[in-house]
Image (tube, protein in one colour):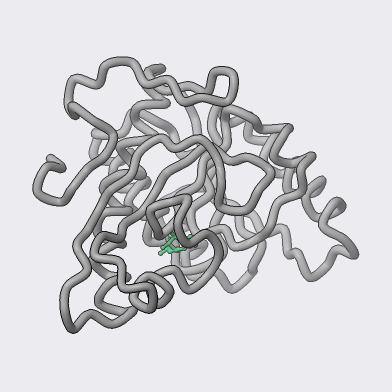
Length: 216
Ligand code: GAR
């Protein structure tokens, strides 16, 4: 069975969706560890309570990004994961870190990339007046919130939405597509080849653009 390491910075709800899917057998991976750059990340306690190894690499203790990334790399590699899963890990990564894990580093972002990389994606979507918003799982490349797209889920923007209601609608879909993408990887159906995503004919989903109605 393939193993994953999950990196978080905060509450860890995407982490929980992966841990739960691994526990109920719908996601055939072993969660080897949950790592965080923040000692106060709420998700660390949840992971520890689930019996998963946790480790903190506190970015405030390092002088520069490269030395933090080197320490984080050493921590990750001590668990020899097949896949590194960024789940609300709010640090910009050095090119060296990203290249070390090329093809085995994925991220989830709360927008339909390439629209709205960075922060405050839901408010920015509302400010632009988009009618369709969503989330994206992608392989990580050196550019922030950028890289070959694995799967997206779209949600409508509804009259009267504010950033909180829209975020909640998107988060529900994040919790669907992240376990799905990790499952594809774990089953050997998903890979990065020459900078492009290859996904072997999924039997359970006809496409990797998912709307709430279509997602099963
Ligand atoms: C999620 O919405 C995730 O998509 C986002 O942070 C949140 C973490 O929530 N990630 C990014 O914005 C990355 N650029 P969680 O800790 O409850 O999973």
